[in-house]
Image (cartoon, rainbow, N blue to C red; front, side, top):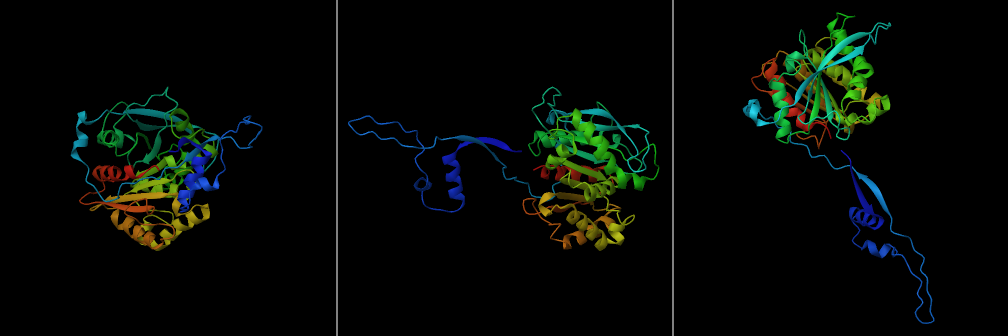
Length: 362
């Protein structure tokens, strides 16, 4: 978040002098900026021409301090109802269409969104980071949040992270890849990014107070560092497809228990090197660099997705110009979280999100 401060020209020049390591006083290089008055003492009159001290607003981007990526087990205290104020779960309806196949038919879909405690629809000044998160096969947004107005382990975990100061209050929107016009799950996942950008984000971020100043493509791109996308299982497949196609609009990614299927189903396991190169090529062709995105991926130690995801992760590590593996996002952009003992289940998703969310949104 940018913070506006007021500084004088003199102060700004002193700051620059300190940054360049110049040990001489900046005052030696700056003319007196005090307003002169004409002296009438005795027979001598002097006038000094000078510049008035001006003030200007300077925007400074504070350096983000990231927590270390070292794995932490989810604190059991998060389940205690009295630990924190609770956010609310709302149902959001939006119109969509077949963005790939075309046609004029309009379809209604829904998402379930977690709004943090204190969210006020009338408060247009406070802005929130937003994450979109996709379910796995045969599931729905209810798998995470149970339903509108309800609580769940996920909503309690978000409450806990916010109350504990581990992450800023954020909106988490749970979405679905199922459609009325296509029954092919894989194609729905690979193509969801069209619906996301054309239909869901403009509608959702028009209603809720995210960092997008407006929902034009330009407004969405300008707020990309306050937006994340993640998903579990087939939702992770969706996440990798979103990463390779929508870097211009989303900076943070959290694929959980699933590999990239751009080169075929489970290609992260069968073709890890080619898959990693495909993702690197997508970054390079987008015009972005390793400094422009972050990936926090993860799976369970007994996860059926582990044999496909981890070979892809290892291959991505080899492409260190693009994917800079690190113990802290201050030093890179890529990390893999392993939930020992976890399977292909909610426990793994909870623990990966618990570890990953505090590292997002710079």
